[in-house]
Amino acid sequence: MNTLMLVRKFRALNKPLLLVMLALCVFGIYAIYSATWMRDTPFWISQIKWMLICIPVFFIIAFNDYQWVRLGAIPLYVLSVILLILVFFIGVKVFGARSWLNLGFGNFQPSQMAIFGGVLLFGLFLSESEGMHPALRILSCLMITAVPCVLILIQPYLGGTLVWLPVLFAMLFVAGVQVRYLVTLLLMGVALIPLVVNFGLKPYQKDRILIFLDPSLDPQGAGWTINQSLNAIGSAGFWGKGFKAHNTLNELGYLPSTIVHTDFIYSVFGEQHGFLGAILLISAFGLLLLCGLYVASQAQDLLGRLLSVGIVMLLFTHVFMNIGMTVAVTPITGLPLPMVSYGGSFLLITMACMGLLQSIWIHRKLVY
Image 1: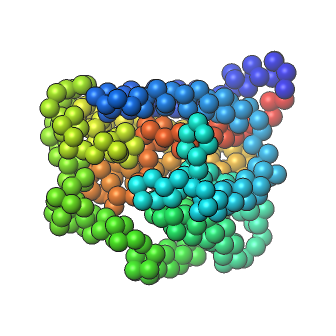
Image 2: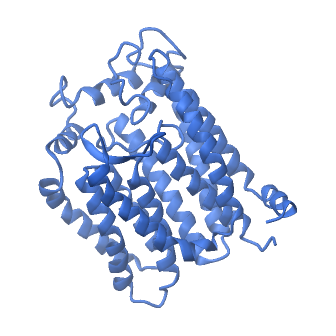
Image 3: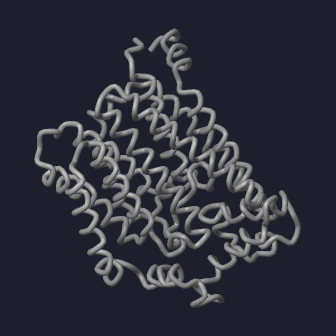
């Protein structure tokens, strides 16, 4: 690819999508610093280092035609399954879940790579199977979902399995599967919930569901984190307590230091910046998702539309579940907030997703 072509593709980037993405990345570094400034470990510096790795990945994917997915989806999916299996042999155990691989310079979570590979494979299969019976298309996609989801659930990482079904549901809808089949799939999923809860979840995961239903059940134990999160956000008022404000629940240690920069970073931000800051952050994510949907509407083929919608639903599910669990709207699942929560592997996959969205936008018309 010559320099002139690179310049043309850079100029063709979707500017609103790019600006919102960069703003959220910069804000993420600020949020991580503001959540951990009183501690010795400089998590925000580590996030900057990961950002320096992720930005080139974003541009490489953005500037290459997304049609590479037709050749790369299956190998990436298979590689992610292999890495999920390796986790059980050489994985690193963090907070009771063996779901990480040590790369030497940091830990990598294969479940994040698996859902990205799943989106690519869903898009490839659904775009090539328009003439197939809807029931067979759904069954095939469920088979694609089953292997990584079972491996992720065994780790155990419940949140890593929950993102698959909303993504699949959205992509099936865009692929033209009739609503009656989707409703049947939804009802089957609901019917399986008791089975999954009773036989697929660890005791602490069941406790999270019970605490979600009633946070007052164990206020000094399993319900401590969610109750303190509610107190932090609820006590902030309209303007919040301010950056580096003294005597915040985070500074006093009421919010567990192990998760304030990851799963519960929204709680810290909400306490510091109040209702106004929370609305601005949610609005930024809303704008990002709307830009993604607009990219889908302008895609040149079904594959592009499917990939765009899959990525948008993947990001939406993370945003909804992460913010929801901090305000007791959803159970605690451990899903990070895209581009804001600390974490290198999820940031890498998120930036790969954003690069793919930009590639679909750039190549909606032949720019060669």
